[in-house]
Length: 171
Image 1 (cartoon, helix red, strand yellow):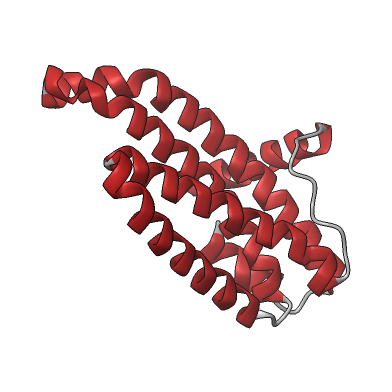
Image 2: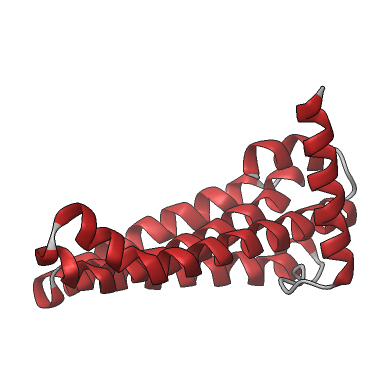
Protein backbone atom coordinates (compact mmCIF):
# COMPACT_ATOMS: atom_id res chain seq x y z
CA UNK A 1 0.00 0.00 0.00
CA UNK A 2 2.82 2.42 0.78
CA UNK A 3 4.44 2.55 -2.66
CA UNK A 4 1.13 3.21 -4.38
CA UNK A 5 -0.33 5.46 -1.72
CA UNK A 6 2.42 8.09 -1.43
CA UNK A 7 2.34 9.31 -5.05
CA UNK A 8 -1.45 9.42 -5.05
CA UNK A 9 -1.69 11.30 -1.74
CA UNK A 10 1.06 13.81 -2.59
CA UNK A 11 -0.34 17.09 -3.82
CA UNK A 12 -3.71 16.59 -2.17
CA UNK A 13 -4.90 18.88 0.58
CA UNK A 14 -3.99 17.79 4.09
CA UNK A 15 -7.56 16.66 4.76
CA UNK A 16 -7.81 14.72 1.49
CA UNK A 17 -4.44 13.05 2.07
CA UNK A 18 -5.41 12.03 5.61
CA UNK A 19 -8.75 10.66 4.37
CA UNK A 20 -7.00 8.65 1.63
CA UNK A 21 -4.40 7.33 4.07
CA UNK A 22 -7.13 6.44 6.57
CA UNK A 23 -9.06 4.45 3.98
CA UNK A 24 -5.87 2.63 2.89
CA UNK A 25 -4.94 1.93 6.52
CA UNK A 26 -8.37 0.50 7.32
CA UNK A 27 -8.51 -1.75 4.28
CA UNK A 28 -4.91 -2.97 4.45
CA UNK A 29 -5.16 -3.55 8.20
CA UNK A 30 -8.36 -5.56 7.76
CA UNK A 31 -6.68 -7.83 5.20
CA UNK A 32 -3.58 -8.11 7.38
CA UNK A 33 -5.60 -8.98 10.50
CA UNK A 34 -7.50 -11.74 8.68
CA UNK A 35 -4.22 -13.13 7.34
CA UNK A 36 -2.61 -12.82 10.78
CA UNK A 37 -5.47 -14.72 12.41
CA UNK A 38 -5.18 -17.54 9.90
CA UNK A 39 -1.41 -17.67 10.30
CA UNK A 40 -1.72 -17.53 14.09
CA UNK A 41 -4.07 -20.50 14.03
CA UNK A 42 -2.30 -22.57 11.37
CA UNK A 43 1.26 -21.38 12.01
CA UNK A 44 2.17 -23.74 14.85
CA UNK A 45 1.02 -26.72 12.83
CA UNK A 46 2.98 -25.51 9.77
CA UNK A 47 6.08 -24.89 11.92
CA UNK A 48 5.93 -28.43 13.24
CA UNK A 49 5.21 -29.89 9.80
CA UNK A 50 8.13 -28.06 8.16
CA UNK A 51 10.71 -28.11 10.94
CA UNK A 52 9.70 -30.91 13.29
CA UNK A 53 8.32 -31.12 16.82
CA UNK A 54 11.36 -29.37 18.34
CA UNK A 55 10.05 -26.11 16.84
CA UNK A 56 6.70 -26.37 18.64
CA UNK A 57 7.99 -23.89 21.24
CA UNK A 58 8.53 -21.22 18.57
CA UNK A 59 4.77 -20.80 18.14
CA UNK A 60 4.51 -18.19 20.89
CA UNK A 61 7.28 -16.08 19.37
CA UNK A 62 5.77 -16.52 15.91
CA UNK A 63 2.41 -15.24 17.14
CA UNK A 64 4.09 -12.30 18.85
CA UNK A 65 5.86 -11.39 15.60
CA UNK A 66 2.59 -11.66 13.70
CA UNK A 67 1.08 -9.03 16.01
CA UNK A 68 4.16 -6.85 15.50
CA UNK A 69 3.70 -7.12 11.74
CA UNK A 70 0.06 -5.98 11.93
CA UNK A 71 0.93 -3.00 14.12
CA UNK A 72 3.95 -1.97 12.04
CA UNK A 73 2.02 -2.36 8.80
CA UNK A 74 -0.76 -0.09 10.01
CA UNK A 75 1.71 2.48 11.34
CA UNK A 76 3.61 2.38 8.05
CA UNK A 77 0.48 3.19 6.08
CA UNK A 78 -0.50 5.96 8.51
CA UNK A 79 3.00 7.41 8.16
CA UNK A 80 2.29 8.11 4.50
CA UNK A 81 0.06 11.02 5.55
CA UNK A 82 3.15 12.78 6.86
CA UNK A 83 5.18 11.97 3.78
CA UNK A 84 2.40 13.22 1.51
CA UNK A 85 2.08 16.48 3.47
CA UNK A 86 5.83 17.16 3.26
CA UNK A 87 6.72 16.09 6.81
CA UNK A 88 9.28 13.30 6.16
CA UNK A 89 11.42 14.44 9.09
CA UNK A 90 8.76 13.22 11.50
CA UNK A 91 8.99 9.73 10.01
CA UNK A 92 12.79 9.82 10.27
CA UNK A 93 12.47 10.87 13.92
CA UNK A 94 9.98 8.04 14.53
CA UNK A 95 12.30 5.48 12.98
CA UNK A 96 15.34 6.77 14.87
CA UNK A 97 13.55 6.76 18.21
CA UNK A 98 12.21 3.28 17.48
CA UNK A 99 15.70 2.03 16.68
CA UNK A 100 17.13 3.42 19.93
CA UNK A 101 14.22 2.06 21.99
CA UNK A 102 14.49 -1.36 20.38
CA UNK A 103 18.25 -1.57 20.96
CA UNK A 104 17.85 -0.61 24.62
CA UNK A 105 15.04 -3.10 25.15
CA UNK A 106 17.01 -5.84 23.42
CA UNK A 107 19.99 -5.20 25.70
CA UNK A 108 17.76 -5.53 28.76
CA UNK A 109 15.30 -8.25 27.73
CA UNK A 110 17.28 -10.73 25.63
CA UNK A 111 19.75 -11.69 28.40
CA UNK A 112 16.81 -12.26 30.75
CA UNK A 113 14.21 -13.80 28.43
CA UNK A 114 16.07 -14.96 25.32
CA UNK A 115 14.09 -14.94 22.08
CA UNK A 116 10.89 -14.08 23.93
CA UNK A 117 12.66 -10.93 25.15
CA UNK A 118 13.48 -10.03 21.55
CA UNK A 119 9.83 -10.49 20.61
CA UNK A 120 8.66 -8.36 23.52
CA UNK A 121 11.18 -5.69 22.52
CA UNK A 122 9.88 -5.64 18.96
CA UNK A 123 6.26 -5.54 20.13
CA UNK A 124 6.91 -2.70 22.58
CA UNK A 125 8.76 -0.71 19.93
CA UNK A 126 5.98 -1.26 17.39
CA UNK A 127 3.34 -0.08 19.88
CA UNK A 128 5.34 3.04 20.79
CA UNK A 129 5.91 3.89 17.12
CA UNK A 130 2.23 3.34 16.37
CA UNK A 131 1.22 5.67 19.22
CA UNK A 132 3.80 8.21 18.03
CA UNK A 133 2.15 8.31 14.59
CA UNK A 134 -1.42 8.43 15.93
CA UNK A 135 -0.59 11.25 18.37
CA UNK A 136 1.27 13.17 15.66
CA UNK A 137 -1.88 13.69 13.58
CA UNK A 138 -3.35 16.38 15.88
CA UNK A 139 0.03 17.67 17.07
CA UNK A 140 1.73 18.02 13.68
CA UNK A 141 -1.04 18.05 11.08
CA UNK A 142 -3.73 19.64 13.23
CA UNK A 143 -6.28 16.97 12.31
CA UNK A 144 -7.60 13.97 14.22
CA UNK A 145 -6.08 10.62 13.34
CA UNK A 146 -8.07 8.60 10.83
CA UNK A 147 -10.46 6.06 12.25
CA UNK A 148 -9.15 2.53 12.04
CA UNK A 149 -12.40 0.57 12.27
CA UNK A 150 -14.30 -0.45 9.15
CA UNK A 151 -17.76 0.80 8.26
CA UNK A 152 -20.15 0.24 5.33
CA UNK A 153 -18.42 2.76 3.05
CA UNK A 154 -15.13 0.91 3.50
CA UNK A 155 -16.72 -2.31 2.29
CA UNK A 156 -18.06 -0.44 -0.74
CA UNK A 157 -14.55 0.95 -1.39
CA UNK A 158 -13.13 -2.58 -1.13
CA UNK A 159 -15.70 -3.88 -3.64
CA UNK A 160 -14.86 -1.05 -6.04
CA UNK A 161 -11.12 -1.68 -5.73
CA UNK A 162 -11.63 -5.42 -6.24
CA UNK A 163 -13.83 -4.78 -9.29
CA UNK A 164 -11.29 -2.36 -10.79
CA UNK A 165 -8.41 -4.79 -10.21
CA UNK A 166 -10.30 -7.75 -11.66
CA UNK A 167 -11.37 -5.87 -14.78
CA UNK A 168 -7.82 -4.55 -15.33
CA UNK A 169 -6.43 -8.08 -15.10
CA UNK A 170 -8.91 -9.34 -17.70
CA UNK A 171 -7.72 -6.85 -20.33
